[in-house]
Image 1 (cartoon, rainbow, N blue to C red):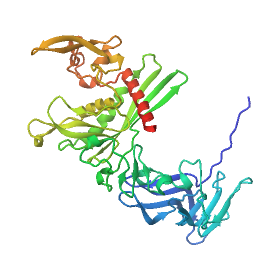
Image 2 (cartoon, rainbow, N blue to C red; image 1 turned 180 degrees about the vertical axis):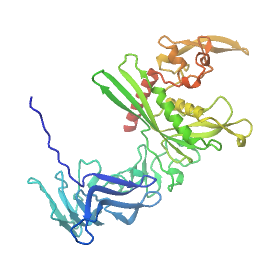
Image 3 (tube, rainbow, N blue to C red; image 1 turned 45 degrees about the vertical axis):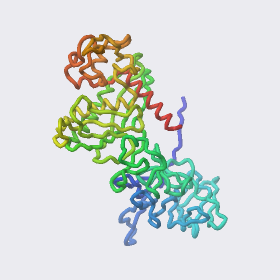
Image 4 (cartoon, rainbow, N blue to C red; image 1 turned 90 degrees about the vertical axis):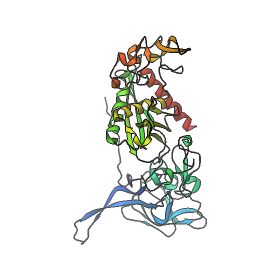
Length: 458
């Protein structure tokens, strides 16, 4: 047998690294190319200097500061830009120095004052390009790079304020950002459409950005639940791994055990899908969650708001299924008569309620609900009794395809529910052994993610 080989070409200066601040703002980009500096001309390099490709400053709501960009908007591979100007409405470099070239791109180099090609610049035998100074006939065709992930239209670096992608074709360089579910205009400091979580935050305008706190707040985009499918050809089994990005807003006056809560959420969410296998044995499930905790409501992404509730059976609530943008509340503190006398709940219990509500966002319902679609934990009406003159359902029985084990350990079923004549907590007294999602529920979550992503694309 003859082997095959593949020639690979590695070019310095083609890889970029972002330097960003606490808001994710891309303040500068540098390449993997470095320049040696000999300060005393003795032939020995004293240090290396990074190749800064772009640098920019932003006003608080994200508008680019005029005159505070270096190479911003014109990140040309192998090129060093000094200054930018407008020619016929198009941004071009004032001076452009070319040191390398790759991928036969761009086919046109353009500047308004000068273009310098230094000695180390090389191009292939079949490589053709032109270089010229822009004048009043310039039509915006120069310095364009296609097929590169870090570049957008006309070689523009695609990411800026909050690390979001710029849409430079509509409003010009850096004047419009894609936040996933909505488009943001940094010159106005407002989104161009209504916040999908307006009903959850009536105190805020539906077009606001970061609760009007751009110094320390950001707006998050969607894609909060996602899944990774991995097929094993040796076993014929596909693993579906759920990943969730969750922001916890601590609005409670009494709950302080934040770090422990974060660990509990991570552990309990992972446990919920651990060991879950489909009925046919061809699909397994697993999960992980990235939790960030803040003190203010400042995003329109995927949030749980911790607050202090009056003591009662209700510990949390969610508005309905949506794996991409949602918000729900959880009781972190409880009070009986006076909210000022609230008592914090244990982090372990809060975390379990959060995982419970997370499954609701994935379209998972309670096993005793008429809308329940998970057959392996399906409960049907069992015993009706007359209580205070009213006929009430007091006990449930297993559905045709339900498993008592799955029902008893299911995180979506309350422990006081009666199944086959016994309360759930009598089957399993340990509350935290009742923290599982069933295989059918995992399948429902997977299907809901697909549906929400399809809806987003449309």
